[in-house]
Length: 260
Image (cartoon, rainbow, N blue to C red; front, top):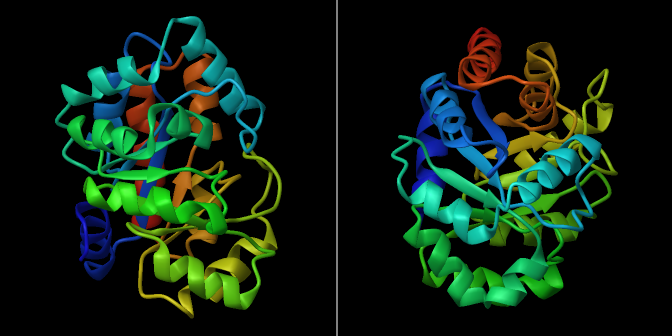
């Protein structure tokens, strides 16, 4: 059964649209929900919400700084979900966090709390495929789509299994290492996107290091779209607000809409 996240992304793709999923760290500032709404209005197809964790193993320095700032404000998973529950963003919301928080709350309870807040997808990057099955089942039982990740080094047989089990979309990591802004798009981005598209009809989005509209167009050439995180968070950390976020997302939207 196709859930809300996947159905929305498929509809965008079938309409000839390259997909754009910006990221925001939940609780980053007092206006973070206004930023989220502004990004939705500016053309996001879905929005990824980071739930801060004290040991974010896949996050680069920018996202780590954003998480530290949010935690310093007293942000918790529950305060983020309380904030989100009052938002009608008009696009699917996807939570991103780490396995320790899921284990602490309990898989089924955590998934239920996400669903109750109106979040329809979740990315838990430190759950390897061999340890993810119980989480996937708990998420599915609560109507939350468990998005799984593939990487440039993922072997072909494992790539097929991940794509079969991923829900919502398949997150193709453009390069090995941590998230962060980059001066260029890794050649491995196109390779992993093409490999993934060859074995699944689910939406395939490329993330990690997509920093400019031009890079988004390049990364989306072999994929269905992109996830943009660190460059957007750097702008917000440097004092940007809802209007700046809207302008940022609009620039990516315009570039992607102009791409073949």
